[in-house]
Image (cartoon, rainbow, N blue to C red):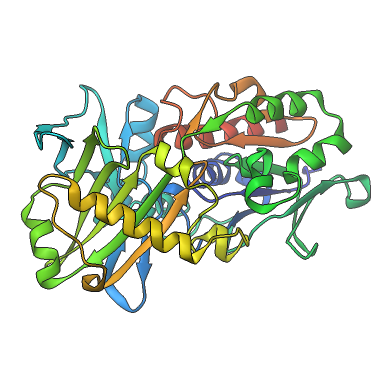
Length: 399
């Protein structure tokens, strides 16, 4: 008799979640019923998503990660498997001294490849992970965007399946295995942002699984380097001085508020600009997420519009203080300026060991840039590799 087909729920459709879905779909298609990707955002990618607007066809901005640095053979092979969904990043990278105005080239170390998505859209990498060579979504995968999981339970009454609920307590999914892509539902910072206990922590007490308990303890010990970004889109005369710089990725040294500036040409004389704050500045302005962010729109995280405006003005003023950077008038922007907070996108501390990244007894697997891989913790590559590793661990557990 053939074994029953399993349903798998993945919380998060960033690079890790998309990679896990892809490798599960390709490695054990005969064992799968459905892979449901629950994503709070409007589309896949997470920190490597690409923001767009229907009212401005030319507008696009990678306001999290404009490219990925790939350092391992496994990472290069994964990118190669995506065909045209990924391409080499060719932007001009420099370091800018905020005090002297000196600019130095910022070349990647030997053996490191810089990769972005097709057409410069990082989200195309995540999209490519979910699709086959013809561009169709891989058979068992179902995407559920703007879907936030607020509760998790696994009880005998539910046939031992995981039950996923929304903010109203309504069931939005059931699954035999749960893949936690990104540490959100498992980390104490959940309480600060959304209130209440982290869903997986609450569920773990009913399961009394020592491996899961140990994994959650490691995750709870991790911290993060938060970043606030202000991004905007310029066209025509407003874009001209930015494009004339000939710079794309500017790491800023010696400034208290700004750590980086990304200038992303968008065709027809337009460009998007992203200003990244220092972590210190983001910590000083905790509790502001950006009204247009998924955390605020879907998750209900509090975000003061008044404080947002003050922070945007402050960072734009700081941008104007930097040598060579043009002055920005908010009224000249075709889109934005908007504020977004990346609160847990850059994890710090000890990564979750691979031995704890899968908990067969609880039927939980973890993936994300907070999990140990051969790549640097906190990198896009580490998220990709951890997703592939989680899929392999589930495959092996089923065998």
